[in-house]
Length: 165
Image (tube, rainbow, N blue to C red; front, side, top):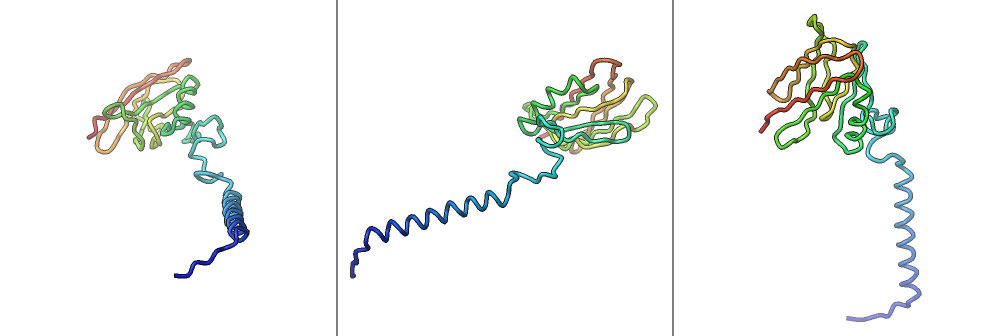
């Protein structure tokens, strides 16, 4: 086997070229995508137009609602906002596991549908008029119903625990 000695200058130049190309490639990749973890039009995640980590507020008829809390920022934002919403719902499972994808149906005292939505996380905040309601929550094949009274001032809270396996 023949050993050739490569001049130190050539090795240094080659290393500098590789380093420069690697940094330039990383800068290009960063510049090509200014958004991390989604798109700027994704209004379902934290950091949207509501600010402060609160998930997008949805509207169904004259009822507004928001749900989420899978991430720490969303959880904190939803918990902080509870006092400003007439109804707060929480969905948990065994070991205090937080649940998402809970189907929620709210009916008024006259059995008229007020809200029919799916919670995107363990917390759902609902802006309802004062009155008596029944909240139906379904997770997988488990169903629960709870009567709630939304006061003229203040808030109402209801927690749903699903003993899943």
